[in-house]
Amino acid sequence: MRRAETWRDKGRLHFTHYRPEQSWSAVRAAGVIVHPTVDHGAHGEPFSLSVAQAVICHRRIVASDSGNLPALLAGYSAAEIVPAGDARAVTGALRRALDAPRSSRPRPTWRWPGACGSPSPPPAGSTCPSTAPSPPPPDPEVPVSTPIILDCDPGHDDAMAILLAVGDPRVELKAVTTSAGNQTVEKTAMNARRMCSLARAFDVPVAAGYPKPLTGTLLIGDDVHGETGLDGWEFPEPEVPLQSAHAVDLIHDLLVDSPEPITLVVTGPQTNIAGLFARHPDDRARIKEIVCMGGATHRGNTTPYAEYNILVDPEAAHEVLASGVPITYCGLNVTHQAPVTSEVMQRILDVGTHISKVSASLLGFRSSTYDQIWDLPDAPLHDPVAIARVLDPTLVDCVEAPVSIELRGEFTRGATVVDLYGVTGRTPNAKVATHLDTERFWDVFMKALTALG
Image (cartoon, rainbow, N blue to C red):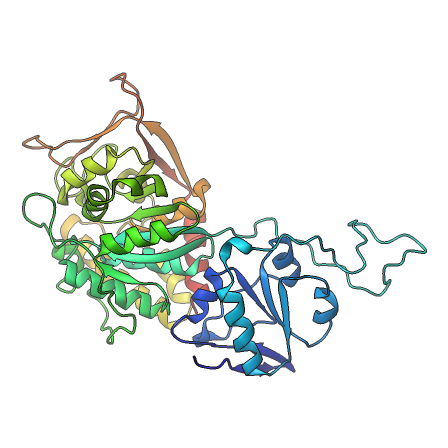
């Protein structure tokens, strides 16, 4: 295991990269707070929580012995104090924090020195130290990470969904699995590896799934996404490897090993998920919900009534809908509320990082194909909307409605039949997205892009 390194700026020692095979994403996934910290670019240290907020959230803390940190954390059993600048000590502390069971998150009876169990100042004659600092006010929106598995078919908009999932701490990306869709499964797996490498998500496993739909032949989206499925940027060889396990096996193992239900975010054809339910029907109880980019309440984008992800494998979509697992559809009627306008493109460029430059180039290619095919230069960014629904449900309004997948219609195969007005009298079996808070969505996306460095 590679030792930790430290970095000095303005007299303060900061912790930097600790081991490449786990990366800071693993530290974040384990809920460990490292302090003091700074955003130092390539090392990608992701935290901005103060020590006070970390304690309020019952997080494990690795802190240096500089300043007043030892006094502040005295009595907090989940903190480990290490000598400032001692890389070996940092490595050991991080190893112990990462190896601690997630279920053992501390619930200490501990208060800030000087608080005396009350947020008000100590009264005269109190035994509390009068010189002790007051804690900073807690962040009312301290993120709580939702564990997700992203099943996708990158694809430019899937690529942006990966960046959003890695860059926003409100979701914990457990794995990326790929299906055949926008390109062959070999190419979509390669593209997932490229994007995880770009985002330095080295601890996120990537696995390939089924090479074709349950029935029929594969319909790829090379007219939109190009020969590689991610045209618009020349990527180096990805550092993130391809897992030897099939996507279904990886998903199954993660579900079985997880102490809590996992959310599946599906932004491609649903072949892998249908295969999971066929091979491991008990896994349905291990899934919190499925949030998919798929379908539409009105018109399609590949045939007059069918959206692409559903049309590629309507039988799989039907099986997933019939599984009984709670499902939310973020369809075209909502994703078209997230167009990549020239203003949005400028905001992406203004982030001023390598990742934002790559993103702008990829989205520029996609906008050009949308303009050629549909005379629509402001191409909608479909797939990140499904991620947004998970990390902040208030971004995407939904209603409950009866939904069915059309399998036989000569002109309507692959359509999602959504009874928004209850005219069929059927019981609702899904949530259907109806409105996107576009301004806040783009704010969230830009914040995640910035956090990636």
